[in-house]
Length: 286
Image (cartoon, rainbow, N blue to C red; front, top):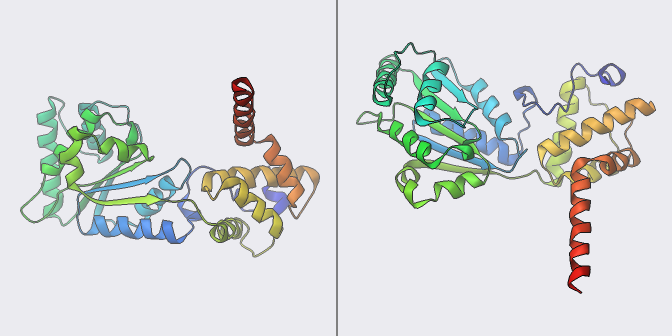
């Protein structure tokens, strides 16, 4: 709605992950480099965790765009699956022609495909998003995929993306064998204040193809204070602020506009509700 008004070629703060807007904060750049290294060196299992909205999926999309044609990838986003359904989904996403049957038969067909890829000097990566939703039994069955290997290297690399609960789930005693096979753990943290400002300016520059100023300095500071450096919250706040600025005919977003947006934000209302609830509880106790 406001793109033409501000001269954007596309919306700068769309919450849909887009690798074109990937911002190389120290943490996110390190995560991407770690993943590329783990895949190229055929490390097997890799786990990346982060809070909701921390940028895991954006890192994943950027990773997929940086992998060359010698790497086949399967991206699994539906994690409410049985072990057999997950195997079928992996085969489908890798575009492997297979005959349905038992899990053992499916696994055998996947193994044949992986051996063929190795002969052709190709790597295979399976990325499982929202992996914290996988049942422990399914996680244990995913571990069985690590048995698909030669004497020298893994035939398949598996990347788990998930919220912090994933690490807690992997700590279950019954998943010890899987836990021991995980080569790399990485946790994405929120942006600090400096990186939050650079993140906003980066996205604005990509969308406007200019260095034009759209937010005042104190506005950027307020955005950081409210978002706590979480990329998704930053995007939501900036998008709403630009929309309000468009409605008011403002070419430069000032602090009062963001304050108004924050007041109407569902996140702010939830925080305020919790505060009131705590207050009520204290009064009852007294």
